[in-house]
Amino acid sequence: MIKLSYDYQIFSWSKYGGISRYIYEIATRTSKVNNFKVDIVAGFYVNNYLKNCSSDLVKGWEIPSIPKSSRIISTINAELSKKWLKYINPDIIHETFYTRKCIAPKQCKTVITVYDMIHEKFAHLMPEKDRKFTLTKAEAIKRADHIICISQTTKQDLIDILDIDPKIVSTIYLGYSLQDHENVEKKPKITRPYILYVGERRLEYKNFKRLLQAYASCRVIKDNFNIVCCGVKSFSEDEIALIQSLGIDNYRVIYVAGDDKILANLYTNASAFVYPSLYEGFGIPPLEAMSFNCPVVCSNTSSIPEVVADAGEYFNPYEFESIADALKRVLLSQERTKDLVTKGKERVKFFSWDTCAEQTQLVYSWLK
Image 1 (tube, helix red, strand yellow):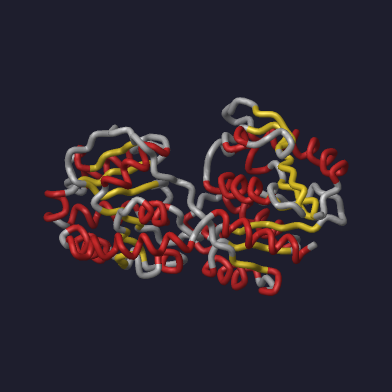
Image 2: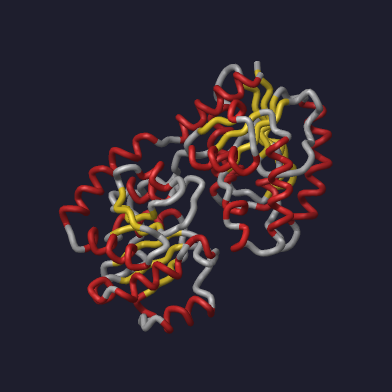
């Protein structure tokens, strides 16, 4: 029997999000395997995914999300967790984020997952306050007994930048969670064909500015397609000013907020999904798009080709002309669209949370 614990970190401040979803998916699946005794030592948590877990699995209490309270909650949880972990005495702790000191007993082995090396590779694009995070992350990684990377690209970047021994690093691909919804809401009603963009826009490496430049530069696309952006935040004043400065009518670039049903509807009805990022540690949105028969047009950098393989139309993300040309090759060709949809259906079969959990369990078993 392997006693396995997941720590509180990500659940203290992340209500939703990719990392907490990943931990939730592997923890719940591993808890059903006979030779594992699993605990999520969450303490006081705001995370919505944990609502679906039994009290046997989650050690903690749900609390409302209070702005600027996460640091206080994390400090309390660190002290609570030390006591819980001393009582549980796990063989392995899988840390859910990066912290300088391990809170588990000394004999406990530590696993940590590295999602990307964006802060290290794009330090010049990051705010000054993020430097402290980068140092903490490096310390957490270097004291781990085993490291999981979510792509081969991330693994190689980790080894190159932090000089980590490859023998203690595994690559395990993520799954994807967005499922088809029966009776999907028809809102938002978008009457014009559109290109779909999903996720964060304001971070410079996400490359949203060049996507807008590509759109503005190509009359045939601009005249026939909108851009629909689905994400957490509506357009900032700077984004609105950029759209106007490029000569794009405001009604051509649309922001949509919504839950998984809205997002599923957007993927289903999009003419194409575009992913212009300069760097991703993995990239789940292209897989979600493929699962909804939406053709993928994406960057040819970092882990993106590793994930998308032959199921995407690629461009150089540093050149807006290349982005525009790739969009035209798909949007103006029914044959190419059909080809990408067919290849996408096959590609998504390689990725699932079941496979991710099974491979992670092998790491735990080997480490024990």
